[in-house]
Image 1 (cartoon, helix red, strand yellow):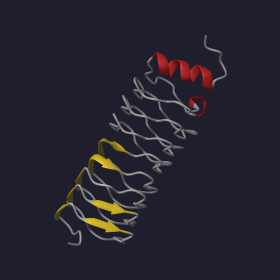
Image 2 (spheres, rainbow, N blue to C red; image 1 turned 180 degrees about the vertical axis):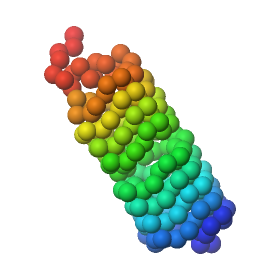
Image 3 (tube, one colour; image 1 turned 30 degrees about the vertical axis):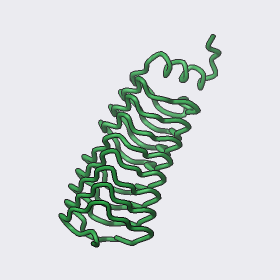
Length: 186
C-alpha cells in the first residue's frame, strides 16, 4: 500500500522511493521501513510514527509540524530546511542525522541517540537533552542556552564550540566542558 494522507500503515517496507512533495499529513506508521526514501517538500504534519525506520531518508524543506516519532530509527536522515515546529521525538536512534541550523528551541530530546549528529548552527535554547547520547556530535556555533544537559553523554564533543550560557550540566558534563576549554581535570 502506498502511503497517503491519514493512512494507517503497519509493517510496510519502502526502499529508495520518492514521496517528494506528497501530502502525507496525518499518516500513521507502525514498525514500517522507509530506507533511503525522499520526502523532500512532503507534508508530514500531524503524522505519527511508532518504531518505524527512516534510515538515510531525506526530509529537506518538508513540513513535519506536530509530527511524532516514538522509538524510531532516523540514522543518517537529513532535515535541512524542514519545518520541525512542534515535532516530538520520543526516544530512538537519530545518529548521523543532519539538523544543521534548525530551530529546536524548547524541544524535548530526552533519551535520543544522536551519535555524530550534525547540530551545527542549531538553536537548542531551553531544550531538554537529559539522558541523550551526543557522542561525537558536531555542535559548532550551536546555542545551548538554558538547555538541560544533565545525564547527557558528551564523549568526544567539543563543547567549547557551542554557546552554553546558562545550560544545566551535571558533574560529568562540567568536566567535559572544562576539558574542551583546555583545563586539566584531576
